[in-house]
Length: 165
Image (cartoon, rainbow, N blue to C red; front, side):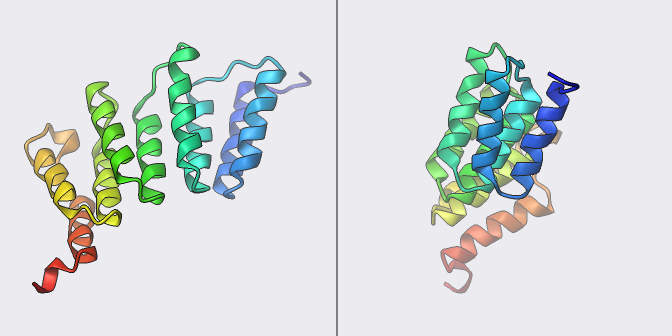
C-alpha cells in the first residue's frame, strides 16, 4: 500500500471529478476496492459528484444505492450531489424522488431543494418547482428559501415563458 490511505484515494477521485473525468474517478474507485481499501462516505460522495459533473446521473444514483450495502449512511452532501447530478441531466422526476428520499432520511438542505427546483425548471415542470418552493416556505430554518431559491424558481417560470403572459 506504500503510503496510500483512504484520504489519498478520496483526493484522487475528487480531483478527477473536478476535471470532469468521471470514468477515471470510477476506475479509481474500482482500483481502491481491488486493493482492499474500505470506501467511506467521503469516497462515495466524491464519486457521486464526479459522475454528476460528467453528466452520468445513472452512475451517481448507483453509487448512492451502494451506501446501504457498505453499511454507510448518506449525508447531506451525498443527497445534494445526487440531486444535482439529476439537475444537470434535466431528470426532474429523479431529482424529486431523491429530494423526498433526502427529506425522509434527514439529509436534505437548502441546496438539495434548490437543485430539485432547478431540475424541475429545466424539465419544463415549473408548477413542481413552485410546489417545492411552497414546501420550503413552511419548513424549518435550514430549508427556508434563500435568494438562490427564489432565483431558481424564477428561472423555472422564465423557462416556461410565464413572465410575459
